[in-house]
Image 1 (cartoon, rainbow, N blue to C red):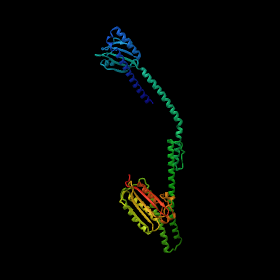
Image 2 (image 1 turned 180 degrees about the vertical axis):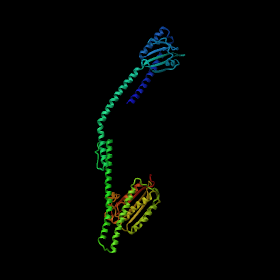
Image 3 (image 1 turned 90 degrees about the vertical axis):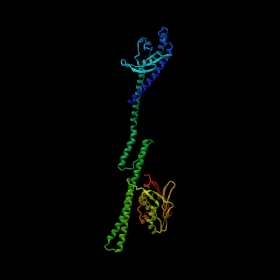
Image 4 (image 1 turned 45 degrees about the vertical axis):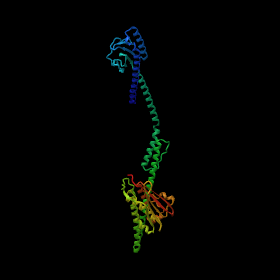
Length: 453
C-alpha cells in the first residue's frame, strides 16, 4: 500500500504542477497581450496608472504576484509595490524571456519551505521583445490538496483492508472446511478406504474439486475391485489344474500296482494340466509386460499382407483338423508402422479363437483393406457359435469366458482377447466386434498406418 500511495502521490504532483504551469503561461500571455501596446510609455504617469490598475486586477484574479520588467531586466511595475527599480536578470526564467522564450518552473524556498512557481512571458512589439511579464505563484495549495487526497485515500484503503480482513476471517472457515474434509478423505484413501464420497454443494471451484475427488475415488474403488477380482481369478485358474494334478497323483499313489496303460493315461492327463499351467503363466507374464509404462514398442515398416498370411499359415493345421475353411482376402498390398511380433500375437489370439469356437466344416474369412482416411482395417469373420448380446461387452475382460464348459474343453484361459485389445491400444488403434448366436462373430481391428510417436 505504501508503494501504491507513493506512486499516486508522484502522479498527482506531476499532473497538478503541469496543469498550473499551463495555466500560468496562459495568464501571462494574456497580460503580455494587454500591455504590449502601451508598455513603452510606462514612464508616463497616466500610462503607469493604467498599467498598474490593469496588472493588479489580473494579479488578484489569478492570486499571484506580477512584475513587469524592461529590456534591462529592471522591474518597472510590481503589484506589491516593493521591487520596482531592482534588476532581476539573474533569474533564469526572466533571462530566457528576454531572449523570447516563455518558461515556467517550480521552486521550493529553502528559508520558508514554500513552493513557488516562477513564470516569465516576453512582451513583443513589431521590433521584437520589449519587456517581460513575470508571475510568482504560491503552489502550496496544490500540495495541500494532494496531501488531503492522499490522506483520504489512505483512510479508504485502511477501511478497505479492515473490511477485507473481517470478510476474510468470516469466510475463512466456510472456505477451508471443504478443503479440510477433502484432506481427511484423502488420508482415508491412502489407508485403502476407497468408498469415501464427498457431498457436493454449489457449482464453484470447491465443488469442481469435490467432483474430481469423487471421480478419482470411484476409479480407485473400481481398480481395487478389478485387482481383487484379478487375484481371485488367477488363484482359481492356477488352483484348478493344480487340483487335477494332485488328484491324478493321489490316484496313482493309492495303489501299488497299475497297468502300464493306466499310468500312461494318468501321466498324459498330468502333462496336459502342466501345459495349461504353462500357457496361463505365459499369458499372464505377456499381459503384465504389455502394461508396463516403460514398455518399448519396436515400430518398423511392416507388410501387413505378409504378416497376416504368416499367421494363417501357422494356424492352418489347427483349422484343417476341424475341416474349417480359412481364407485370406486382400485387394492391395498394405504396409504400416507396427511392432510385428505384437501384432502377430494379437492376430494369433483372434484367429485362434475363431478356430476354437467355430464348429467343424465352418468358414473363417480374414479381410485386409484401407479405409477412406488411411487406416488399416483387419476383419476376422467366422461362422461360429456366436456371443449373446448381453455378454459382448465383457469379452475383453480378463479371464472372462462366454461358456465355461466349452472354454475348459478348448483349453482357453480367458486372456487371449484381453491381450489382443491391449496390443491394439498400444498401437493407437481400436478393436470391436459384432456377433449373433449360432450365426458367427466378426472382429474388426482399425490401426493407423503411421504411428504418432
